[in-house]
Length: 284
Image (tube, rainbow, N blue to C red; front, side, top):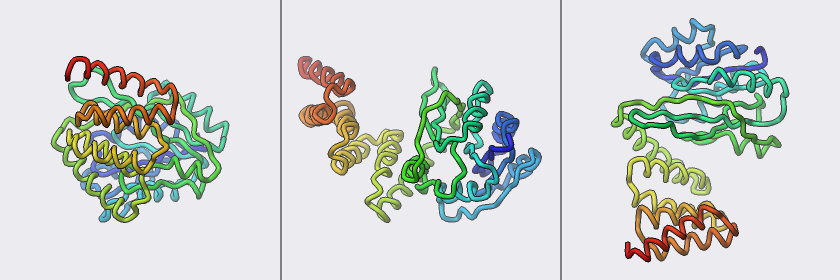
């Protein structure tokens, strides 16, 4: 597809890169690989697929800047942004082709299936990875970078798709924990630089949660509810932490009731309130 640029950020991904490129190369009019400091064969592997391999100074960690560098160097009208440890499901090819051909001013959420060693089923999340190559559309966030807000604020829309990615997490649990701690430090730096960027708090809570640092995650959830007083979902999550991880049933009830005031009939809040009432009856 001449209209589609595949963009990748890569550092020392020789074990995964061929599998990623094999999964998507037939769709791409070009491949732009941004290399953030590989010492393995990743650049040579990408070049063998015809990729333009561009070095990027990553001495200051900033994934948004690296992704934006990729977009700035993409020559085609549409961008598909992947990581080297992801593959595109071949059943999704027709949907990608259709959306690129429609050429609407929209960013598209892809459905990502995340596989962990020892887990029976993958977890699923969604990320905007297919979007028009427009100069105003750029990522923000040094880690957990997103382009969603940029698309919306510049007149585009966001839509869900059935396009599926498969992503396998590293089996090295300690390496994952080191990455969590690294991301926490960077997120804290971002918040110190600009406390108004409260989207960083959501990712900070998630990183603490993955490390099972539930006290810290609960404190961040409380802060999110404070800075977003009209966000029912924020109060719901604060309630979940007060119910399940930092038991405080009085505060949990307040959180769930506030979520229901903001969103009457909120099914998740009603469900957790029933769980809370069961615990109170059982004396737990």
